[in-house]
Image (cartoon, rainbow, N blue to C red):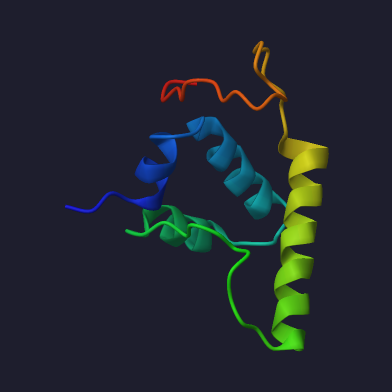
Length: 98
């Protein structure tokens, strides 16, 4: 059985990051709770948002949504880790219980 996007993410990253990011998107009105639930339960992983062909209007709309999402997360949801490798090329072990 295929794993959900949330399960795949948790296998390689800190699960709290995607949960906090999702919460911030709901709180800022960028996505609804139902949209976040559908996204996190999806049985595929989007490997890279940098690949694709978009018309200019769609690209600008997507980019604006991503920019607003990142700004909201940085201002309201981001909590830095107290980890010696934070901010370096070395990636810490993923932790499912954080």
